[in-house]
Length: 104
Image (cartoon, rainbow, N blue to C red; front, side):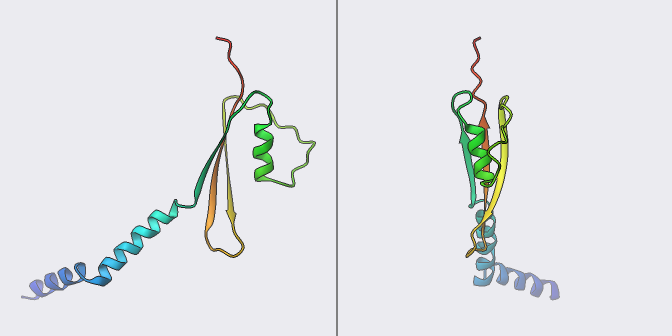
């Protein structure tokens, strides 16, 4: 009889508004975890400044004399940003596609 009461209590909780709200909040947290992700792809001709743009985006105060190495194929970088008035952070996935033209 005690097991039947525990089973009934568990069923009552699973069907309760609190259980539904808890499940909805957990799902919302999972969905929002990736909601602030941004993916950026830079592509263009060889030596057109793609890597320089990426470097400026990530580090605006970078010295202009720093010359980036040519991108061989695909370069990946990431940056995290948080607005001052917000608790959420934005994660930027930045891809730099090399502009080397093949003559094959």
